[in-house]
Structure formats: C-alpha cells, structure tokens
Image 1 (cartoon, rainbow, N blue to C red):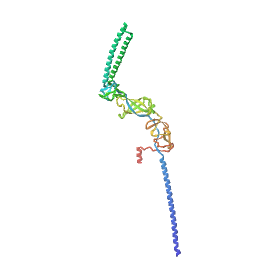
Image 2 (image 1 turned 135 degrees about the horizontal axis):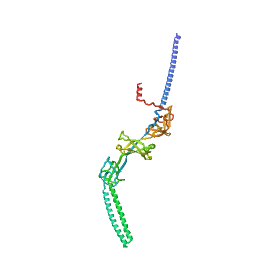
Image 3 (image 1 turned 120 degrees about the vertical axis):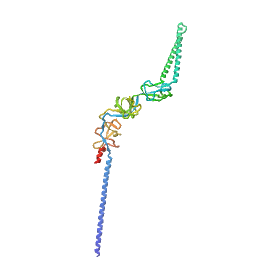
Image 4 (image 1 turned 120 degrees about the horizontal axis):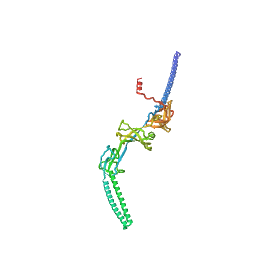
Length: 401
C-alpha cells in the first residue's frame, strides 16, 4: 500500500516542474518579442526622425524667372522747387524805414516802389558835398582870374615866367578839386536814389522782413534782407541724380513732377542742365529742370517728387532687390537648376530702381531666380520649391471638395 500512494505524488511533482519550465520559456519568448518590437519601433522612429530632420534641413524657396524691362523705365527722386528768378533786396543806404507799399503775396512790376527809407545822415552829407562843390567852384573862378592877369603881366615883363606857371598850376589844381567835389555830389545823389526800394523784375513779393521805423543798415555782413521778389511763372527744379544714371539723363529728358499740396496733379518738366560734376559726399550730380507755372500751382521752395524717364533696354532683365547676395565672392544671384539644386551666378547691376534691380549680365531669361535666398546657401545645395499661393476661387473649390 505505501508503494501505491507514493507514485501519484511523484507524477504530480514532475508535471508541476514541466509547467513551470514551459511558463518560463513562454515568458522569455514574450520578453524577447517585446524587446524586438521595442528595438524595431525605436529604429523606425529614429528613421522617421532622421527623414524629418533631413526634410527640414532642405530650405523651401519661392522662385520666378527674371522679368523683361518692358517699357522705358523711370527714376523717382526727391527734388526742390525754386523760383526761376529770385532777388533778395537789401538797403544800399542806412536810415529808417519811412514806409512800405507791398506785402507778401503781392504781384509787382519791374521798377515798382516797394518801400522808402528816410536817410537823415545821407541828406546832411549831400548838403555838405554841395557846399564843398560851391566853395571849389568859387576858388576855381578866382584862380582863373588870377592866372589870366598874370599872363597879361608876363607880356609886359613885370613878372617872371615861373610865377605865371605857378598861377596856372594853381588854377588847374582848383579845377580838379571842383571835379572831385562834383563826383561826391553825384555819388551821394545816386545813393539818395537807393532810398527807394524797387522791384528788379516782374514777380511776386515772397518775403518782407522789415516794418515802418525799423533801423536800416547797409546790406552785406550787417544789413538784413528787406524784401524777396520771385518770378514764379516758371520754376527751376533741382534734383540730385546718382552717378550711375547721369549718362542716361541728357538735357531734354522729360520728367513728371508731383507735389503733396496738389494730389492727383502731374506737371511736365524738362531737364535743362546739370552741374557736370559729382558731389563727393553724396555721389550724385545736381541737375536742373524747368517747369511752367503760369497758374502759380507750384510753390517755390517746396518739395517735389520727380519721375525721370529712362531709355528703354530691350535686353535688360529685372529681379527683386531681395534676390541679391553679396559676400566675399562679390554680387551673386541664387537660381535653381532642373534637379532643384541651388546654382549661384555672378551678376552685374545695370540700374538700381529701388525694390527692383535691372541686371546687366549673368542671368538668362529662363533662369529660376530664388526671390529671397536663405542665409548660408551654397552652390549645389538642395532646395524645395514653394507652391504658389492659391487664389480665392481655388481655395473655395478645394474647400467644397
């Protein structure tokens, strides 16, 4: 009996050990499977991350072919309006302003009186000069009579020839004094005429800097400007043209002028001359244009926007100024080849039109120019072309679909 009861116990124990062994194997397999799955997932994630990183490292750029220059271009520059003739009137004689007859904005004719200066000092000097002239005239009359008498005495031998010559010399000296005194009177009478301030030409009084009773000093270092008369029927327009464009803007070039006080109005002007020299500090040449102003629509001294017509260049290509790259290798433009690889091309500038650059050489009409190349681009780098923005109708149809 004891032998029969021990057999089932041994059998159960062997079954239990086998089950544990199987369970252990399954656990090991499951753990290995989890590890393998984790490794595969991580490798896949790393691969996707690598692909995403590589994709992000490729810049997305907007490209467009260079544009033809089309019609004749224009050059827009700030200008300054000035009267064609402008005279600053100063006093030629000192005194006090007695009266003035015209104010700013008044039209005047050539020779019209603008003001009168009271000249007490000059009046007294003129009286003294006239008195000196009268004295000199009396002296010359006396010396003439004396010289004539001594010439008669010389014939009788009562006087010497030397004495007669002295009397004649004295007479001639007195004549010279008369002429000098007469010159003083004429000069002071001429100055007295300058007590009337008159307009030098037809125009408009654009400034009055004096009033009745004001002390007037002679114009120059101490005297002040009394009036300004300007001829505004025609105006001069001064504009500084960059040196690059000077050969393209000869005399006779047409221009259009706009001013802020006349919105929507355009005025035609013509280049008349230039300074024929380049200003060292600005690198530009001063040019003068003429514009008719018969209706006085333009104000001298004001700002004007000058649009100069430039000659047409059929072979020139234009690109945005943002497409230019400038580094140690010079001026270059980034383009994309057929494989979407960046190709840097050396270019020269024909004209700088502000936001648009006219290229002289280095580009072809079918080049795909990168509008705004990213920093640090190199020749041969890959790039992705940005899709053009959708129009409103395209976006609407996409939304419906």
